[in-house]
Length: 584
Image (cartoon, rainbow, N blue to C red; front, side, top):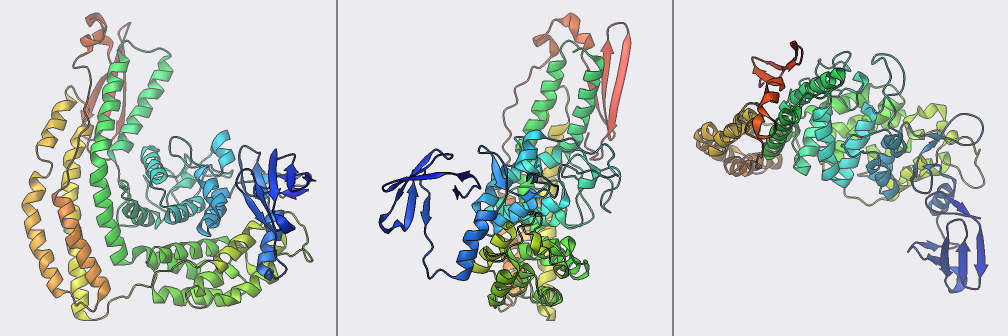
């Protein structure tokens, strides 16, 4: 019997220099001396030489013991369920652990995370749950497994940082923007906070927006619902429009019939929103770049993440805080004072190789090896318990590695053996001249952000769905920066003065100053392209005039949006929503 890299077993038969894996329906060629097997699908298996190191031997053993969920068409690394009987999948934490595998360089982990996203951009807890699409718990404030969580969002942050999968990131951000906001308990955040799923326990936590801004800036994707302030998420035109559409759709379902000509109004709505989203995307991306620079300069997320790591109790919350610190360091946002705190944590739990990795990967990873070999099973020493634990997220005093899922051991060995470049820590400012330059740079970034917001405000007119949406668009095309350009020369002059202030020996301040200068032309030269809007000018173009009096009418303004239906039999129906954007 043999097991392949996807966890499937097969009987083997040998015919001279050929090996046939019956269950895999695959044939391989054995090399002279039986040192390797080259399979017809391109995979090559190499026999471990007698001089293989202990860690290489262990990796081969762990690979043979790992557990997968799914079948031959869809399989991914997973835990095993804790119940009795035949092994079953426990894929509730799949995204988080597969993201860590992906960060460690294991493509199987990357594939599993990517397969957890549906066509709409929404992420689920695993590829299997993406297919079955379970319902959210009925009560948003009580128990039951939600379809996603903040822990998995951290896994996605890590995945996107490692892969720069901008297409998937853009779809995910668009889905979050269209999803309903939180309106009950919101993880200590304000009412109206965005959510990762359709349950309020999936709402953003403090610091999530700051990481999304950093990722968005790196992939040139706007994050319209996030701001620099960790406690403030922004209402958006898209979100308000989707709330209105949901109300309209619910009304149509309740009516149990389609009023004549309703498609016309729906098309106007959908087309206007599509045009708005297309036009606003580059402006939001520029705004996100500016805000990400402010997040970096103000140390907002570095302070929050490191403080969480310091105060969180042993177990998964401390593990996740260290994952977040590792993420920031991978993005070049580490600091010496962050290292000092992480080293204290590593000393508190010296038996956790992942903690040792985050603390000492720049200097000396050697002590990790003894920990990995001591705590991860070997052929001679393996309890063969249920594969239920990612050991490094548990209190190391409880020795949960006896229930290892083996994937945790493979991850630890990969990051131990990796040769990736770790960006140097940022150097922060102490002298008065540098502090003045830093403050000036931040002020200029704020000025640029205001200019971009002027353009955004004008673009939001596109969302006003009325009799002639084309006119609103035409007005904007004329000069979207009429107000902004008048201020731009002043900002350029002040930014040039900032460069003179900057002490060249203070590299970080100089880089921030340069970032301000480099972003100026992008603001000045921003071109807003409005897609062509093709809509009927009046209902009679599509339907007979007799039916026009039953068309629903959208009434928009004063912070509210209403849909009025005039139905046969003198029935009148009015529905409406409050618009938090103040745009409708």
